[in-house]
Length: 482
Ligand SMILES: C[S@@+](CC[C@H](N)C(=O)[O-])C[C@H]1O[C@@H](n2cnc3c(N)ncnc32)[C@H](O)[C@@H]1O
Image 1 (cartoon, rainbow, N blue to C red):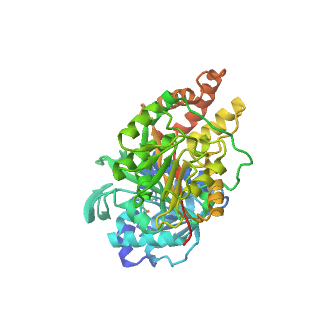
Image 2 (image 1 turned 135 degrees about the horizontal axis):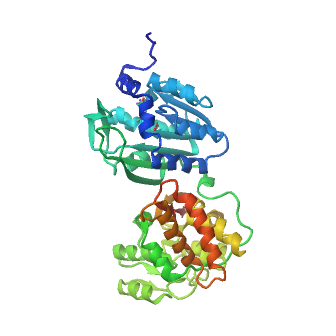
């Protein structure tokens, strides 16, 4: 039987390859742990009945199936007729179109989320860039994009894969984040992993996963509800915090320092801002660091040696000088203040709004930060302690900054993972439960119950195959509107 193909000539090579593979592809790659974790990441964030486009949907399993089973409205598209037929039969709760993604019409703002697990390899590099740009346009503001690919620096490279010779194009891993940003998306996280396909003659493959959002809906960066009261300072145990920080795989400090790259008179506030202040001081030789948290003597001595000025006092009681800085940065400071709103108003007061680079930069844990989630979901109910408000502090700060004329506001995700390289899910869960119990609960009357509750939550977390807990932050950058 011949089938009239709606697939253009340039899609036929990919179609031929995947027509031959069919179900064998799913048998080999269908349980890829990082892909399953990426789908669950999406499931945790999608609004109910979200409209999702799965590009290169293959047999529909696992991606379309898991998303549709959760009640989302999923459309898959694929160039391979065999794949589309398998998907329509195997996942009847989703729709599948036999079409090349390059032929899909421009339809701006159509999808709440788009997934693209490995379909970009059978295109030229220019088409990969073009497709990412179209994905950026297809998403609604606040929409989510998850992609994976095999990163390598070549175009139309001939290679043998799953017993078939084909041509594939890609970019080096470090190029993709720029392409995704150029498509108008903000990267939420990214990671590389290695997969060993169980298929004759196949060696290890490097995979790159990128998670991004289309800016525009601030509720994706901060929850809608503003807390009615502030929980007050929370102090993790300093010694155990250092052990936790040693496990960080972080990209935050360079992004924060970059946001201040053209400022020359910067006030850096708060204990955990020290790393930022240190980098700034290195670059400027002039950053001022003060007050809250810098009582810690070692940090003080270290910054003093770098030529950083220390100001005495608390972050919500800044020196009386108005408009004396062109920027203020406060990273993980607001949750340590008695009056976060007042602290933010103080920051706006000491910045000169007439300076062309005037800004206030605030960093707090992201609302979906998994460590804060454990605090709020496991520890707080057990101890009766109030929930940690960090995810909400920035939303509240944005209102205060707007009221003080700093109403040109942008938010950026700062990826930070806490890595548990221990062998296997159980060892990881135990190490994480020990670390988190020690972090918060030294001297607590119920350490054993806390440890058990954390361990049980962490077993669920690590069984998906991950070796990390996300500890992501969000950076809010507020400028006076010109
Ligand atoms: C490596 S498979 C991955 C399948 C599925 N995303 C998964 O992870 O299970 C890539 C799929 O993308 C499809 N594909 C390749 N180029 C495409 C294009 N230009 N448009 C639509 N689908 C394409 C292939 O037919 C194949 O089914």
